[in-house]
Amino acid sequence: MFIKMIFSWLRINEMLGFCNEIVRFLQSIDMEGLQVGPAVEKLSAKYQEALKVSNRSRSNAYTDMLLEQDSRRDESFLAFRNLMEASTHRKDEAIASAAETICRIIRAHGWSLHADGQKVQSAKMASLHKELELPENQELILHLDSDSWYRDMMEDNTAYNELKEDKTKAKASAADYDTNEVYKELRLACVELFDAIEVLNRITPNGKYVEMANFINDCTQKYSIAARTRKTKNENAAAETAATEAK
Image 1 (cartoon, helix red, strand yellow):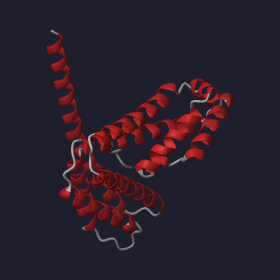
Image 2 (cartoon, rainbow, N blue to C red; image 1 turned 180 degrees about the vertical axis):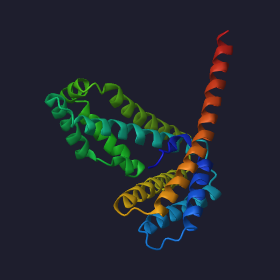
Image 3 (cartoon, rainbow, N blue to C red; image 1 turned 90 degrees about the vertical axis):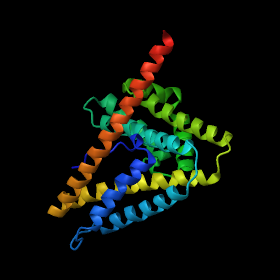
């Protein structure tokens, strides 16, 4: 029903613009008979909080970079977790059993750890990494042909932690950490709203839910195209610079 928004592509001002358009549209709709009101109100509240933080923030370049990397590690965790869950349904019993073992380990450390606060998430990822690095678990991961997915997950988490350490060394203010947490909560509020609309429309179909989804998808396409264009330009510019320096 929804086109996936890759939040790691968005800069802070783009994410705020994306949420602003959605909140304003949803608040213009008559919500009578709908059950999505609480999710809309939560997104609106998180957007207002993020807007206030943005307006008073004087944070350095680390704010954008940490926001992007935190989103990136969330996505790679979900990719690995979902691959393991999907593999439990394979008809090959050995593969299904290996995947179920890895899933039990993930559940022990937090099946939805990506939705936790940044410090808690880092701690849970560290304990998950420690257990998955055990030889017997590494054998299971290799048997499942999922080593590259696992490495992506751990490398993205390491990159986030290293960036956070760099920020500390640069003597960034404690308020910036709160700023990143606010933006993460805004991102999660978006996801919760999208999930709520999809589930509610499945249970009690309503044209208004479809109208909401269509508007949100239009916004997602618009902001994704802009972000993808910028990303491509930056990559091309970097490639040209590297080629010039290599001459």
